[in-house]
Length: 240
Length: 81
Ligand SMILES: [Fe+2]
Ligand SMILES: [Fe+2]
Image (cartoon, rainbow over all chains, first blue to last red; front, side, top):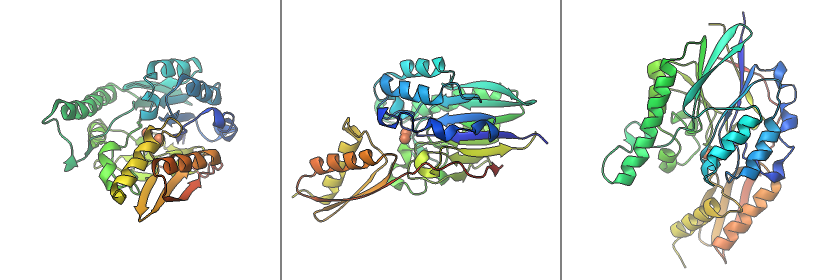
């Protein structure tokens, strides 16, 4: 039985002071996993200098690396440049789109993007009232729509969603409930539940917990470094 | 003296917006004239920097730095889904 082993980490928040600290931890990753997913907040301030550090840490790994950006990577309005720097280092950066990898005979489809907030069913913002509120919620809804489309067109043995923001509350446990609307949105889970996926990986909630489940039964894992305490986690999916 | 509520909010905001920290993952609690900082960061310098920024945002209060260091271990066993 062939397995697809997915290594995943988020919130590595690199800066010049951490240069050279992360790469050694990835040594031998090719014996443990077929692909590495990086769930956003690559940097602290979203600067080009920080992005160069991240690129150097992830460059030329023996397995494919797929990443999305996080809110910190948007802080300096340099997200386009950061994306280019990562791509030049051989990292596939997903911005609400899909990619398919062929890994020892099985295909793995990954749909990814930053995601956004809004909260969770019954306790969330809606597109009502002031334009600022509407814009906030609309941003998440549009992202969820793009994920739904990307998943819909995806023909692969396995499907994984890579996000920065959380699709469920489960993995936020440990965070103050007052800030849940800034940590994720149920709209992200809803899109995945409608179209189907084997796993959703995210970060962002540094004080949260690792494991959760969508209402539709998709496994969710929060792989923020402060949560997992390791350089990455490995999740293996059985042959389809 | 400001209400503890506003002090905590001011420190939290300073940690998020100060260029030296840009830190959103720290819990700030104020009890009387004491501030408690809790969370996990990746480098010891960062732990101290957060304390500095918190101190500047709330001068005169005593800061209890309970932030711990994430020691990034080697990855463990894989999980079968
Ligand atoms: Fe983060
Ligand atoms: Fe984040």
